[in-house]
Structure formats: structure tokens, C-alpha cells
Length: 414
Image (cartoon, rainbow, N blue to C red; front, side):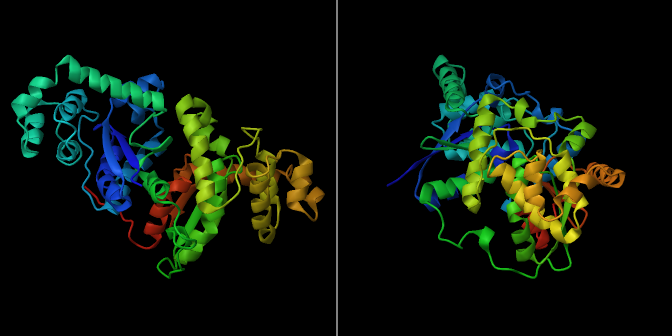
């Protein structure tokens, strides 16, 4: 049975541009009925109390990472992308023109190319005329319609519909009642459309290669982050597949946030729609990787003692403690700030280890580790660093991490 795939977009979002280069192929592969759904992203942001120039609110390290992240995805997709001077451009007239010509995919592709390859403001008349003419439309007729109440109301109605669905950003994909946000969720969209791949067929279960031999993969983490927990369940597999040496870098995430001037609990700063989405997104990642996950009733969690206990343990016992403690908090909803829970996670000699968490040298080691993370450019968890140079943030960047370890991830320089 053919399933409907709605692609909600605005031309002002570079990630929506990246998704637009692949969404038609995705629909064709899955036999889905693709519907392009224009919306005014600024109005969506306003409804969710999101800053209109979101990139301007980021810390310097996060802003630098996100700019490089775009280049990495463009390279992985094999498409051109240039951040135009003057971004973000006004898009309302371009979106209305898209509606006025019946949402022709050729027009959508044309406006995205004008914005993200040619650097042209999409709502300027010359740009609109060029895009429409190249797509075979009568530019005069289309432009005459963009100021009509019918077209204006259509864009407003669609934007309101997007907000009502719970959309808070672009690109957003809707399959049935499920929303997926971001071009980096397109594999999940495909699984939703066609069903899960056979056991062992996913890229995350691939065979070991020697491409990354001699390379070093560092992962910065704290027990406090659900994304760090999810990433930690895959870190050993990533290293094994690539042949890289894995180095675990503990840090106090709250200390990193404080050092870079970021909210100590970013989740609390998100809109209700974004928070609801991410709670579901975490469960989707857990299902994808077949790992247990339950968002804890105690959040945020003070992890200071647990992180010190990790450092107080002999090197050979740290992995087991890390796994047990992550599981206790993110799968069993246990209080890992409680000594009794920590004793269970530590095992033999737990009292001695807990006593050592108060030792000056252990306290200093965690402080130094956190400062090291800040110096490396870390702004969240998990953060992956390849060969001490390339930084990737998030459990959802594992494909890019593996690409870098395989030697395929060097970004273009422009």
C-alpha cells in the first residue's frame, strides 16, 4: 500500500536544502507518495518562541561546529552548498510563488539552488523570474498571483497546519502521525515507510574494516546526558568496525556548559513541541540500536560523585562501571547520586572507591578533564574527536564519524 510522505520546508534552512536533494529519491525507493509542503519557518519559530536568527544564539564552539557540520553533510551527499552573504534571506514571496505554480518540484529545486548554490535572494523578482522560467512556467502569470488573498491565505494555512502538527523546525517529515526532524533522520523515515531492515543489514552492524587502523577516536561523555548514553552503547562498535583506538574522555557536562555560557539544562529551554519530539526521538534511537531506554523521573541528575567514582577506579574496572551506571540511570531510572546505587555499580571495594571521590587528586582530575573538554571545543555530549582534530557532536553524527575514520570525511574548503 502506498504511504504518504509529507516534506515540510522553507528555503531559508540549509538542512532542508540538503534534505531536498534526497527526498525525491527516498520517495521513489519506498514507493511513497511525496507531498512538498511549504511553510513559513519564521512563523513556526515565533509560535515556538525560537529566536529568528537561531545561529546567532549559539556559543562560538557550537556555531563553528554547525557550520562545519553543514559542509560535512553536503560532502557526504555529493552536493554543492555555500552559505550566502546576507543569510537568512526573505523567502515569503518565493514560497508564495511555489504555491502559485502548484508546488512544482522543479520550482522547489530551482529556489533551493538559487539560495544555497548561487547565493541569490529567492524572493527578489529577478530570481523568481529566472527560477520560474527555467521550470517552464509563465513568470508574469505566477508573479501576478503571489499577492492574491488566495495564495497568501494558502501559505498562512499551511504554516498553521505545520504548527498544529507539532513541527518546530525544518526540514520536517511526516509519515502518518509521526514527525521526523532533520535531514539526518531520513534513514528513520525510510524505515518507517518500508519497515525495519533485516537483522544485521543496517550500516551500524557492518563488518569490521581496517580503514581506521592507527586512528584515534575520543568520546567525551557524562552520565547526565541521554544522548551520551545512547552514543556510549555504540562507541565500542564504531571503533571495532573502523579499527580505531577508542579513548573515553569523562567530563562534567554542567561544568562545560558553565564555561561556555550555555544553559545547564538545554532541554528546559526548548519549546514544548521540540521537547516532546526529542523524547520520542530518544526512544527511536534506542529502538534502532536495540538498547533499553527509559527517560528518568529524576532529571537533571547530579553526576559529580559518579564521575569522580569513575576516575577513582582502576583503569581496568572503569568500563564495567561506566556501562552499569549508564544503564542504572537511563534504563532503570535509578538515582546514581545515591551511594547505595553507586556501590552496586562499583562492586568490590565500593566503600574505598567512594571515599576516594573526596580525595583532592580525584577532584582535580575531573576538573582538569572538564577543562580539557572545553579546550577541545566540546559544547555537549557525546562529542567525538577523530585524531585530535575533527569534532563531531551527537549520537546522530556516528555516520559522519565513521566516514572520517574511513578517510572520506575531509570537508571541502571554499
